[in-house]
Image (cartoon, rainbow, N blue to C red; front, side, top):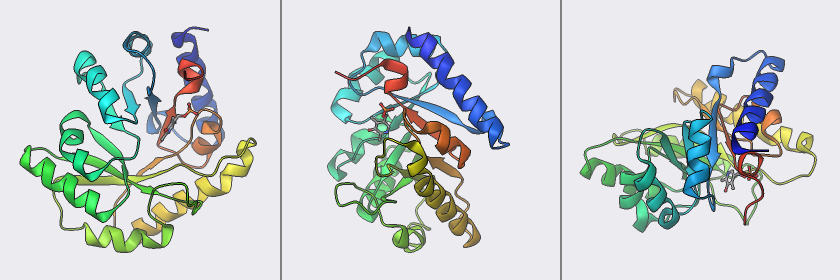
Length: 225
Ligand SMILES: *Cc1c(COP(=O)(O)O)cnc(C)c1O
């Protein structure tokens, strides 16, 4: 299987999951996760039609983004330290891992200085796992209220890394919780829309539960080194 074959297969599976849920496939963005993946393979994915990529480490991302450029979208999908906010703002179109008020404020300030608006997703630790970053569900509304006034970080929605289960059906309740959290925020007057959830082994369930972005690494590029 080539990268192009895998992209076609994943796109097909997204499309079937969307159909099962009565959703439009245009409302679901494939974000290919390229940590440890080399530039040639990223180019193959672009050839195959992928338009958005996620990287987890700023150092690793820099060379790839500089080589490939901004004809495609770049998303930061790993934990971001506050002292890297300045670089993140220049490299990425979206930071999917906004997990503290301090980071949100720093991104806003750095984007302002750079004369741009950076898009963001709030990372929610939906399974309340000690090993994971992200705010707790109960903190979402206060968080959204605290960042209401900021202009240069545009929060578009929520992202989560749910607990791992071999059986993707067991992840479904967590995807549903993230969707309900977004709906609750909408009811409180926060017009966030995006739900970044679902990885190689569970993205079809995520799409059925409302994912607007799926983050796929292994199913496109194979097992990581
Ligand atoms: C690595 C990673 C993925 C992709 O995982 P796969 O199982 O390889 O699809 C998605 N999201 C995040 C945050 C990751 O770190």
